[in-house]
Amino acid sequence: MRLKDRSLSFVVNFLLGVAWATAFIGAVSTFLSIYSDSFLFALISAVVASLPGMIAVLFIEHFITSKEKHLELQKQTKLLEQLIQQEQNA
Image (cartoon, rainbow, N blue to C red):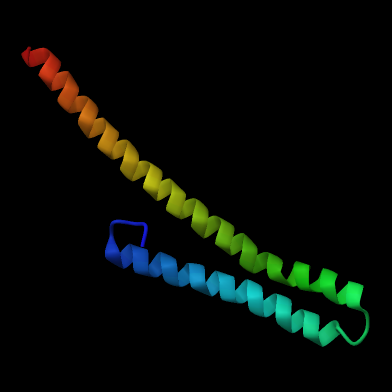
């Protein structure tokens, strides 16, 4: 729960869980289905199969980081406006 908005935080965390599950299930199911043919080919296929889920995780984490940065910049702007107002009053 890194985001302030509870409903947005719930949705983002749910999608993050889905993305991780997609990456894990893709890797495991691909590895187990190809393991009997060749271990190396199964390992490479598992990495490739997990890529869509890992890319989704990357995008969601980028969204969370951008949202946190935006909230922090709003706080800083508010503090700077207060400092300017104090400077003008003094």
